[in-house]
Image (cartoon, rainbow, N blue to C red; front, side):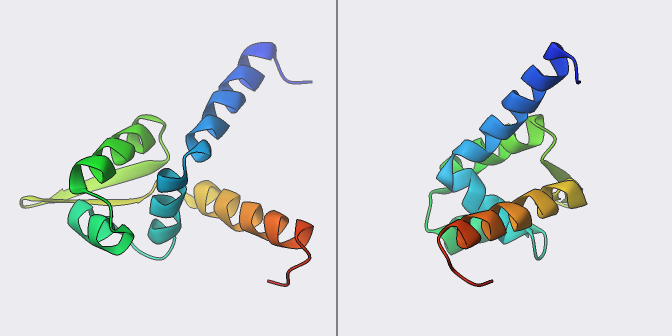
Length: 100
């Protein structure tokens, strides 16, 4: 059995997935890295709102960044995040009786 502290940290980690805008951002980043303006345009959400959510995702080590010139691009931190999104969606679709 895992320690109480580790399980608390796991709970905190899963809280990052509780916001629909953050989930939409992560889903966009599953295919390729993007900058704030691209994410903002695709989601039709203000750049400041996207930047705020990306900051939270970065602090939680869910996304990573790379600065090229003046542009900062964001990507999923690792394949664990991609897998969490994939299996989460599969779970929801199966529970609703949908096929993948």
